[in-house]
Length: 165
Image (cartoon, rainbow, N blue to C red; front, side, top):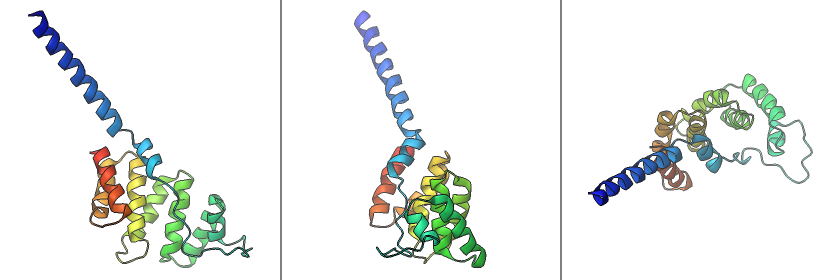
């Protein structure tokens, strides 16, 4: 009888520990975000070695001067609200400055343009922004879109979905 009760107690302890451990892994959005987030490279207006244009927001972005870059991108967006490149890089600058609400707003505009060169990347960064803001159900929507592809985004989206579901 003692062995039987000890066996049941051991199973309960292991079950409770496993449940707690697995839930703590699934519900640590900041670690997931930090594992997968890195700023998007500047492919819109790449800099050359001789480039001395310190006023360009793309130059500032590439140098990691995100506050200055964001101000420049905002100016570009004000002049052309449909400038998807400026919207996208402004959103990533917002993420670098931990302003996820503004990043999400801008990324949605880019993601809504279905055939944009930034659509897939916008979906990726939207999912990461939603993970960081602890909204896994919204992140899952964008991750599921990404899993339909056959690229790095698709592979990483599948991995993250396993961690948050």
